[in-house]
Image (cartoon, rainbow, N blue to C red; front, side):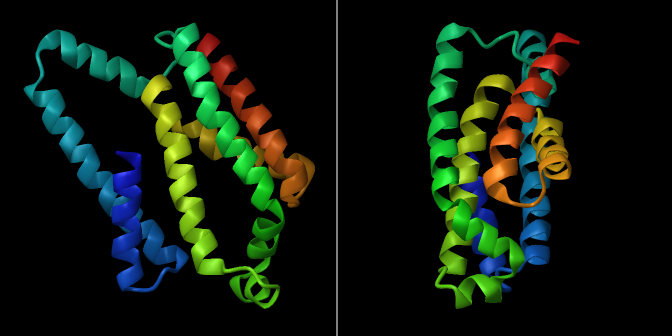
Length: 172
């Protein structure tokens, strides 16, 4: 589902040029359509299924057992390994597309690859723990503020802060 939604966002945004604003607007449009579909399923479900859907959309680790946790470790590790492999290119890309392109980075291909890998990575985790979006939004900003803009320093910190923040919020 995450890969299909990401593919749709990429396809929609490529028609108008793959810039950040278009990508965000296409993402919002696809998210709203997906949300409408989830609401329809919620409306059609019986009470027990509806309650389970509400619990899942709140997110949490209560339903994640040891087996699921270990299965979630695989996409987490694979995603992190891929991230660490492309950090030099991502550091160049964070300066500007032109700067990265002048240094030999295939910017458009890297951007699409980033979207696909992150969609698969996020989809695998969300399928288990639910959509706990604030962790993914807050942790990188906390890490960047503390460790600076170099991804070699703040990417590992963001992963650790995200895991810690998720556990803390789940406990609360």
